[in-house]
Length: 338
Ligand code: UDP
Ligand code: MG
Image (cartoon, rainbow, N blue to C red; front, side, top):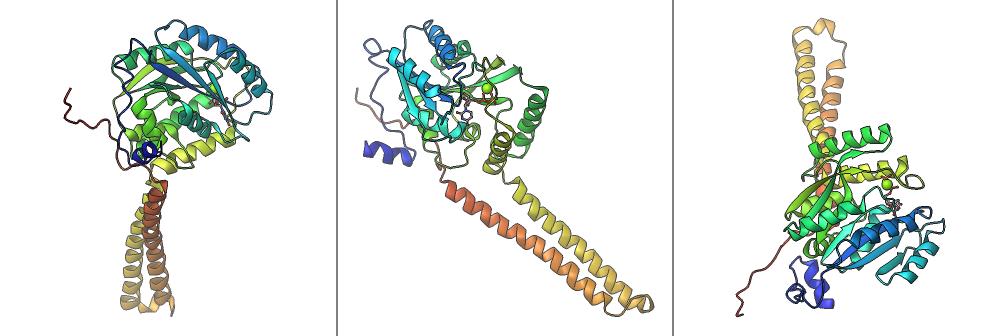
């Protein structure tokens, strides 16, 4: 086990126990990762819907990993109840609320399936769509992203989400797909790779985008929440949005450098202007003005540029401390006697 972890840390895939080859005996396992925060009103209904959906694909084994993200409304009791009646259920119970992205991470750490599906537990991500993801996976996709064709949220949320995804796409270093949340399927290899990302400010859709692999999009219509209300208030939304930009783009830092060059260039113009005035029209310059202008403009421009230089080093420090994997390997091909 220790060996397994060490190898994962350097990004080389560990030869898997060949589950696929003896498919007749052991069916492939599909794991669902299900974050729960104050969903007591709807979680039972959700589980019924999910289990009746997966019953349409009886050829697989299933595992449902619920992560109770510090709910304060009795969700845990209901989850315990569900686990009692369904041996496929696991419940990770957080000691406090850590947030959606961390809850998903804990679920991924525990899920052991050949394919892992992450979905919300408010039925906004329809269980039927996860079956289509499984089909796409069987057809060869390594990651299946569910992309919202339509969504039934408030006009405000729709408009801000629409604008945000496009802004992020335009400034981020990796291609983050638009209108795609955290509803997706990962094959074993991709799930293992995602687990190696251990940064604190997490923006999982960006990490997945940066991994590569053969990613496929699946369009779906996002439903309304069945019960309760959104667990993403303005504050959490803004934090996630900021994590997305700062985690996957250095555009704000580059902006400082650009402003530095611009203000230094403008300062040069101002300096030439004030010296010209001093030399050719000494009668209209107040004594001391030229020196003051030259020093002020020069220092202002220089400071801005220095901030940009410092910023670019901070950017490097930041990306070093994130300790993201250097590369993602799909497979290592070896000569095989058999
Ligand atoms: N969630 C969570 N921790 C949080 C907030 C939300 O685990 O701090 C879960 C929540 O139970 C749901 C999913 O994350 O299953 C998405 O949250 P929500 O539906 O409130 O977000 P929205 O769909 O409104 O963006
Ligand atoms: Mg929701």
